[in-house]
Picture 1: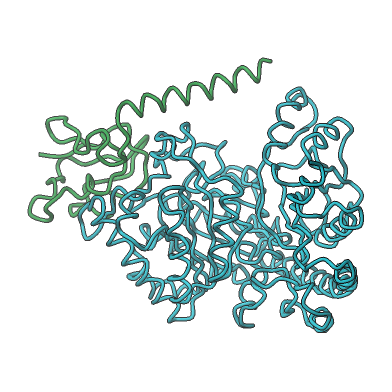
Picture 2: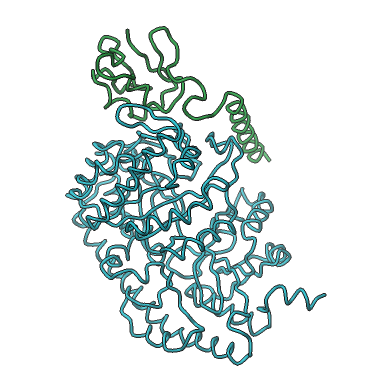
Length: 508
Length: 102
């Protein structure tokens, strides 16, 4: 993790001012210290770059229904429009339908830079459908990045075809490197014309995943590793997984929380297997971060998601709707290039502004130094942010269906993750449910001391304060990190940042 | 002798490319096996390929109507757990219904 280091010396802040876009050492992006050629590949990929995910959109096409393994967190009877989790889709598409849909979305949402095939089964267990889609898109929509997500079982045999299809990003879901742990996650795999149960199957899967990872990195194809954190099963083990995959050349590790509810009908859901708390997830991500780049902005989206991460505009692009759309892709490509250039310019300006805000940071360091406190005497604070994208605070508290979580500390501001909630106020008929939705939001924001939004109504104000979460609508339209830092500085000036234990002692 | 795909099939396509006799075909509402072509993979594979990759317990029957994958054999989800699942789905549905009418 590369974070702005505020309490080391002022020189680092000064040097960061001269950096060009995307190569700045002071980036808050988890990609900050990657070699330039990798950053160039991922700077506009919303799933790989934390910064990019505020600006660029992605889509998945569900062309790959077949799977060659069973995971205990998956229910193969996928077909629910109300569930938002991987492996769930509303309609499976043929490659032709998928290509049409991708082009319709690309023309209507020019910020869409990435097309992924992620299921609802395993893309490489459907090689004909998956590669037919990639081949046609390579030809018809060359300005779209292609990527694929796989369990890895069929990966070694697919590497050749993947490199031909000009795919430079692959995600492998690796939940373990130990077959005994694997046996608790994967009841079976289909391998060489047989269903192989339990530990034996898990061992084959692990071997293929590791082999595939090595083959991909040897060819210069970027590999991200996804891991599902399953408390009591693989949670401690994932630190080891992180070490192993990094050693083999994976450039990013994405530890995601298990999703398990009885109504999903999965083994874990029905067994009452707990999901990790926000705190447990963050601790594990931090433990893994010592070994490699961690990704924290994943939204675990559906295999047919469309739009910015955190939003799903799939309903605007159903088969019957795209049937009626006339797409002139040549025209669309020109518009897309303009929009992408505009975003690039905006990001460059932001980087410049960030350099300016380094002054505030330097001030914080100076004040802190003068206060005779040891550098870490100021405690870190979690803040929740309501945003619709663009890297600024631009959403009403009551309209947010998720909040981004940032941690402010003397060493800077870092992105921690996101928390999904129900919009407290959707307006109209659903407003009657406001109270319970607010309770959910307050519960989900546990641990946060501030919530930053463009506006917050009178009604939620007091319950938020009572829960120890200070509502703050004073930084509307400001860049998120600047606002978080400014609020942190206000808290420091008001003497609110003494370590919690010390405060408790004072009270006693 | 021939195997049969029944209505619990979720149309995942997994079995179709594996059939050594091209006996499996897409149909509505679900995939079907042409009984004239199916050999249950005898002579080609030790195990019937469709039943070896099918993720849905009970979706493929042998010629006597017996499921090749018994309840709980693939997912580890027992019949009791499944009953619990159905209760949870029902509860979610009722809750949604109550919220709508409230």
